[in-house]
Amino acid sequence: MCGFYCATARGREISAEEYIAQFEHVMDAVDLEDYPVISIYNDGNIFNEREMPVAAIEKICSYINGYENIKKVVVESRIDYSPDEHVAKMKKALNGRQLEVAFGFESADTRVMNLCINKGFSANNFDHFHSRMQGMGVLTKPLLLVKPPFLTEAEATNDILRTISYCVSRGIDYVDLEVTTVEKHTVVHELWKNDLYRPPWLWSLIDLLQRCQERFGDRAHVYVSPWTYSVESLDWARNCGRCDAGIIKAIEQYNRHFDLAVFEGLDCSCRHDEWEEAFAKEDPRSIQERIAEQLSYVQNARMSSV
Ligand SMILES: [Zn+2]
Image 1 (cartoon, rainbow, N blue to C red):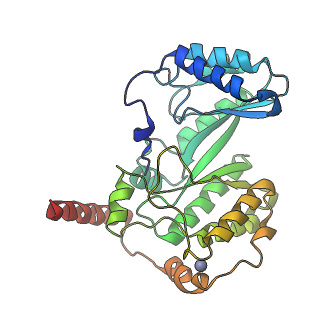
Image 2 (tube, rainbow, N blue to C red; image 1 turned 30 degrees about the horizontal axis):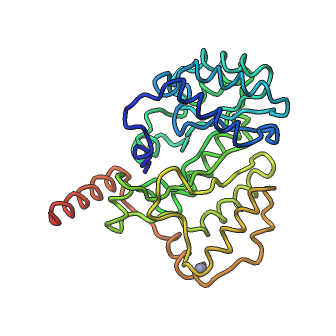
Image 3 (cartoon, protein in one colour; image 1 turned 90 degrees about the vertical axis):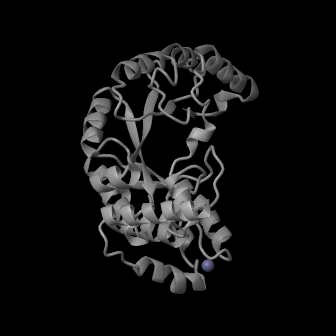
């Protein structure tokens, strides 16, 4: 589902000097003293030396050290690298400031991870990573993927619910929901063109947040990341079109205080017609069968269009 390749330097290495110059540009443009939390987000894996040289991280941290008001720095990494050494250096350079590592955990379900997302690691890797980071005094923030391909609407929301339960059991009380969009040059795009994928309904997101509240209360704070990513999307979480704007506004309000009261009174005929029908729809096939059938359908459609 991830079309971020289009937002990369396509293999050209970015030098430490270029990263540092970028940060200096931001320091000139914005007064970082106004921001207690800053995110150094490289749209990838900050602890991969080939993506981001350690010298750049250290220099940027030394700049951050000059701002007394900055209390916390957030970065993003994959967890199947062994970032301990990098993390230790960064922690030291930040001079006691809190460091939070966000990472795409996506799902605690091995089948979803391996088959639907092709992520390359499992919940076990996450456990190791989380306990190592905890031992170093670093916060972790799992990013969970809402509605990967090959799952029904109900399966996708139940998967998130189970994954949050898993995170809560590990003592993590903040998670981010990353909502799948349709981006070019991805499997999801091919499925979507053939009516085999639809991004989640906004009603599903609200339903999910309400069920989280019932189940976990204050043990889980669930933030809905805005689905405007670094690359253009062709389709995104939506309802019927008439009620979307009001619901997106309510989700933005919800994100500020995690208060579900903002969703009270929201309604639309599409909730009782199309969404309930979509949510009740089951797929008796195994995930393997769905993948095999859907990919061969896509392939045939491509062949016949040539
Ligand atoms: Zn509607």
